[in-house]
Image (cartoon, rainbow, N blue to C red):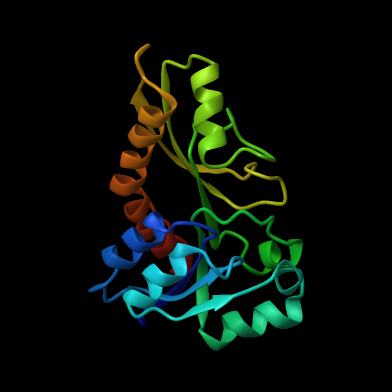
Length: 194
């Protein structure tokens, strides 16, 4: 079977993006072909360029325009999209085109602490304020509802009364680094070989 090209969409620092790129660096089945960001100064772009991955910046208007984004994805033969800290809502046309071929990571145990405004440190603050006994990460299919797609995988970590917002964030991030690339690999191979 030929190599499956994936694109990573990210808005921020890009630790997950870099982790995924490195994970598939020597893979014969999956290749990160493109990194897309909606922010021209996002550090994820520097990470990707340093690892010799093509990057593109798309504005909110470009994202909502199928005549701009779909040809770009076709040019790179993108068969699967991974959202890794991408903060824009995905338009319906792209969800339809990549139905069951687009996943997102969220830094909580959905359905808890998901939805509009729940990203990054805001999620960990909410977990802290709710005095949760555990937190974790969720990987889910992208749907029209923010953080509402069917859950693919969740990984948990216990919390203690001494945990701060920062330690909660660090514990959850460890899970992302350990498990997200493996989930991407499993889901990409399953969905692109149907």
